[in-house]
Image 1 (tube, rainbow, N blue to C red):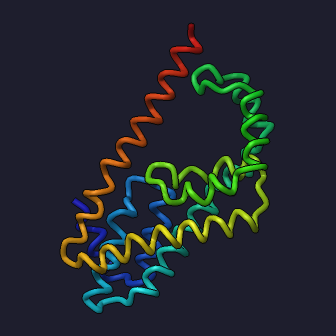
Image 2: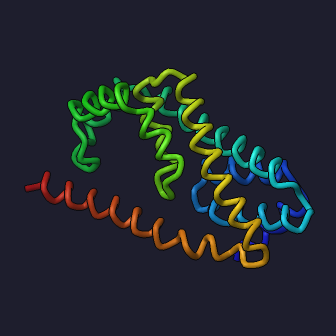
Amino acid sequence: MFDWIVSLLARGGYVGVAGLMFAENVFPPIPSELVMPLSGYLAAQETLALIPVILAGTLGSVAGAVLWYWIGLRIGQERLKRFARNHGKWLTLSPEDVDGASRWFRDYGWRAVFFGRMVPGVRTFISVPAGVARMPILPFLAFTTVGSAIWTTLLAYAGYLLESQYEKVADWLNPISTVIVVGIVGYYIFRVIRQSR
């Protein structure tokens, strides 16, 4: 199914790893749960080296997160409040919710950024509220980098240990991703129904 990922990593090396992890953060259907374990497998085969694989994966991941942070920054709190005022019914979001979320994010957002980078289904979009809340860029980069480094290290090392069975990492993590996404969608539907009543 993802033969093109295998081909790109084999041809592109570390640049391919960084590029795919950047794309994974911008376009979620590209799974880091496959990219990094496959990169770890290639390191076990001595086609690549493990530490540069982890560094390249982290760099690509952080670059993608910065792009989403910038998008959140461009949207801004006031524009998001106007959008919530006009279309908030379907977002189950009010201007007051936006204010409250921004206050919370300014106080505790580093935890969301740090831990969110390691949660499938959340890691791609956690940067947007950080940008909307105007979280200072240096703490954002620090917590994003550390969280991304932990995630890429775990995935790459798992692939390094499993070698030709690297795809098992994705098999183990896919049910977790599914549960998280279903939970988010379920919570959204619950809020829409409650608000319409």
